[in-house]
Image 1 (cartoon, protein in one colour):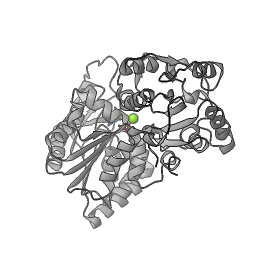
Image 2 (image 1 turned 90 degrees about the vertical axis):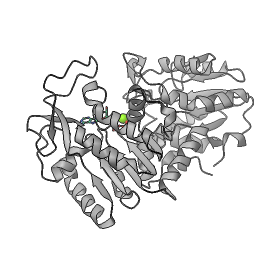
Image 3 (image 1 turned 30 degrees about the vertical axis):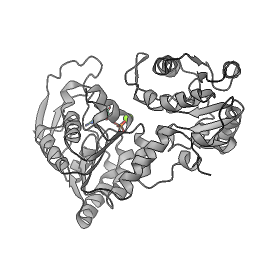
Amino acid sequence: MKTIEDLQVNGQRVFVRADLNVPLSDGRITDDGRIRAVAPTIAKLAAAGAKVIVASHLGRPKGEPDPQYSLAPVAARLGEILGRSVSFATDTVGESAKATVAALANGEVTLLENLRFNTGETAKDDAERGAFADQLAGLADLYVGDGFGAVHRKHASVYDLPARLPHAVGDLIATEVGVLKRLTEEVERPYVVVLGGSKVSDKVGVIDNLLGKADRILIGGGMAYTFLAALGHEVGISLLQKDQIPVVLEYLERGKANGVEFVIPVDVAISASFPDTKTHKPVEDFEVVDADKIPADKEGLDIGPKTRELFAEKLADAKTVFWNGPVGVFEHPTFAEGTKAVAQALLESDAFTVVGGGDSAAAVRILGFDETKFGHISTGGGASLEYLEGKTLPGLAALEG
Ligand code: ADP
Ligand code: MG
């Protein structure tokens, strides 16, 4: 892959596909990690005299403008981080984008509005995506792919656009891929993987590939309840993916055969309802029960204290750790203890520790941990997982050659 250094960017319009999909609450950015992660690439291009056109998606708008998913607050924050003004185009390939790009002087930076305000960005139809990519290509001379969190998507700005412009890989993606190589090739053992989060179906798949690589797999978060159900336990109203039970049983079997240890919660924190993560209203019926004693009307929302200790033990001698997905609903302090314990165990270990996933990375920072104490905090959860699954990532494939 070509890098930025291989491009002659001075005076050129350089399209930077970034992943600025940050968590927002009432229009306020609650975690700017992804903006800070790509800022050095943008600063480097600007310093080299490029006219930098930054573009990203934010959330999941329905292919048309939707103010709650506007990137305008991100433009402001990006400007603060870069210490320079960043102009903002109120559309993606329309009059505003054209005028804003035309007004760029060498070394200046602009951000386009949310790419997903256009149906062409995510279209399944190659021609429709291609048509949007053609319009985007009209804005720029060169392409730099640095939106690591989106490289597993076959989207116009990620997959089709680099085919239309001379392109290079940005520094963030280069770093992320370097880290993922350390998790797949010549891994230092014991290699322990912690999986949590809420997107159960997205995450069960990675286990398949990890069964040939990891020494231990710790299961927390929403996925834990599909494992507990597979073991025949009542899981009440917890997150559960019934159709994945046979898959999970097969993994448990294969784990035994391959000498991969699954560590499943032995106790859980429960409540009758999902906690209020906005106001942090106290949880009146908070309770910890053994993992095989979840009442039918309760929901498991975090690992319990015995499991916290068990996880810490299983992490203590690790030499490599990959963690994806908070092990509880960390957005409410009552259910943040498990996630805190995992983060703490990672800090205390001398392993190469990698945290992947938007919410996992945000959890580490929001819960007050010093992110520099981790080996690497990835900006892409889905992308990291698909890489670890051994899949070809469209956005990386497009940057090759
Ligand atoms: P990441 O972005 O790190 O890949 P996910 O998006 O998969 O992680 O999941 C993060 C979400 O998972 C958090 O918002 C957290 O509240 C939620 N979560 C964790 N444990 C549970 C649980 N037991 N039940 C429901 N949601 C959970
Ligand atoms: Mg997430």
